[in-house]
Length: 134
Image (cartoon, rainbow, N blue to C red; front, side, top):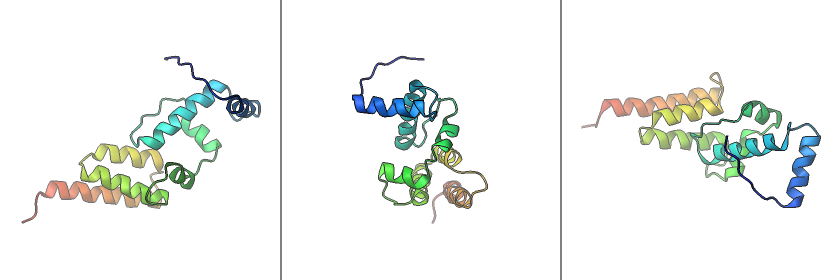
């Protein structure tokens, strides 16, 4: 693992210390690793998370999909609409694996929204294999 030194304002460090003291994070290092990975998942749909227990920590923090959508100020206004936009973008580009990863990373297989997104992705796949229309 690489080590990188970053300076933070004292007030930020105090807030992080309080979270560690309250037991929300095991250590400051866990907080920093989680925070960096979380931001990367917001920026890059296909970011491959390496932080141990990332999803567990995210769940414990009760970060909901609406908050994620608002955090990235996406055009869709709701996480599902943003997800449709993301799947459509990947589908139009033929990047089906990235769309699948996005769906798998953000939805349970039995979620109604997951089924709709998979159907949407299937339509892009089907139209690609059908070839150009006459």
